[in-house]
Image 1: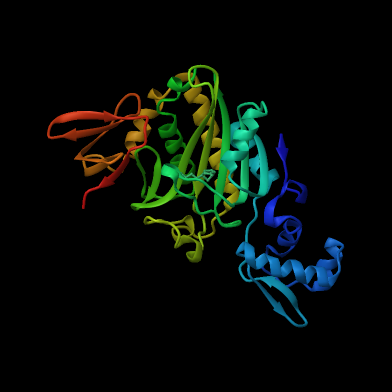
Image 2: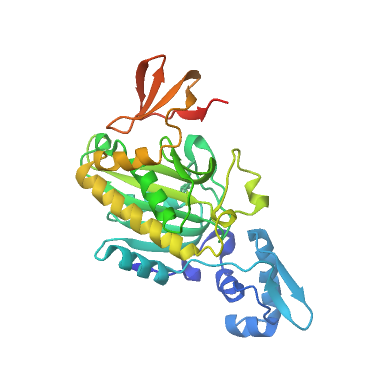
Length: 337
Ligand code: BTN
């Protein structure tokens, strides 16, 4: 089942603006009269809405005699196209796409869906997040119609222990989906940061709902930088990149569709067979193997050599010949300079 975007499932600052954005998305000029006719509002009302677009990061040109156009054309997500790509890639599936214009966080929406009894495969995508969340309490910078923000819900009957390694398996799924657009230089940093030539391209945030020892649900949140404006990117506190810097003609729908299919495939396989079948693929993309690294464990810093991952997906650190495993909790890994 696919819910396409309408103005009624938008919220926040964007209410009433989405149909106008859709009309202007190709970056061409449209007269106030034409826009007013299409939207069934007055020309003055069109002008008011045009002014609001600026606050969404969509500045417009207005030229007397020509009308209005977006300064930069945008490619909006299209639920029907996404569904088609997913159908082509997966055949039979239970993936349900819920496409929104603006949300606080797609993870929040999927967590709400879990509380509301939605089944595995429910997936929310949004054009913009107002409070996108990253790992370690960071924000995830989420400007309108530039990147990909999605969250998939999956139910696990056997509790939190059965989730070991899931976040690594999702990292592999994201890399596989991105490689379909002929990107090279992709690597994973434990547990699941997706790096391109050492810079962060995509992030994954898993959040759990329910009973950690029994029936629980996981929300798999994935953000991919596709065309991050420099003005938004200044808020990112680490070296980052986006697909636009490495590929010409990025098709956001195609990339989002491939991500949905690969994540679905991967979580389905994980729920049947656990992490082990994903381990060798993760190792193939291990960007830190053999490097001297420092890991932060709360206040404590440990230095050693990255020695891959365990069968459970834990990070292995070789400290002067002694192998130590780190999993579960939040450690952060850095290459030593
Ligand atoms: C990280 O810090 O690397 C994880 C980033 C995860 C961002 C995604 S965007 C979609 C989903 N919704 C959120 O609020 N966060 C995740």
